[in-house]
Image (cartoon, rainbow, N blue to C red; front, side, top):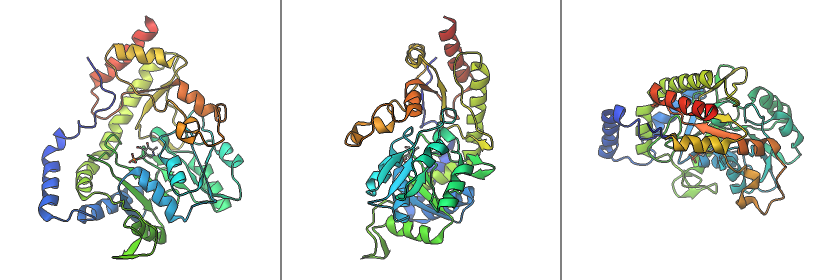
Length: 367
Ligand SMILES: Cc1ncc(COP(=O)(O)O)c(C=O)c1O
């Protein structure tokens, strides 16, 4: 048996008829940019999150950049975010001309450590971007406390966490702006790029809508330095076919996580831990172990594909060589990069495939 690490094409066949009909409808109507499907998806995602406004943009990365621009963050400002994640949040800070300030993460949840955040707040800090990594909410209670007491907006990076909750509330609606990605492998994945900002603030929503279309309110009148960053109408139509299945897909992910966790508990692995008050959307199921590379090779030799998220913490990436960060600055992020091993995780995995992955892990430890 072989088990692919991801299988983003697997959702097409079961939804083939509806997906093709939705595509055909868009092509027939001929309204290709900011059409009715984008508007409808914006309402549907906003409703899912529990806020009034959704603004579709062309990726999760752009959602973060436009969010910072909507908050008027730029040169001279500092934004605190995680060094152990995909690069997009750090990149968005760089793109608006602000300074990236990393704060180390918690070794259990891999999300921002609030004490580390507190230590790095200065008079120039203008926002915090917590990443709900792998599908688990960052410590939003404490972060929102900080946000309220210091007047610091929170931009939630929800790219990996659509459908996850913190104390019963959906991620994305907790901070000032929530940013989602519809990259094909995400829990709600398009057949191309896509993203969305959500917010409860009408002025922020208005600015986001201007920013995504070259800073205009009125055609050919550019009031802001803008972007061309719109969610594609075809992708919105496809996402609307998929959205009603998201809850069931996330439940299946949780079931697989449960199956992994109960079977793997006997081995010297550190398993995912869910912080109190969180529901996890299991975008990624990752274990930690000292000799990660040996287990990864054993699994590959037995047909189980894995992929390391993230092999190099952000402060040690080549593109930041001109910054002052060095090895040892963020020890937890560096430890995670050495030890982490994500296992295959997507709702279409069969129980047989999950059991096969488990059997191969068992084979490694019992060999
Ligand atoms: C945590 C995180 N933030 C942001 C992004 C950026 O999303 P996109 O690929 O849609 O630009 C991703 C993933 O790709 C991500 O995993």
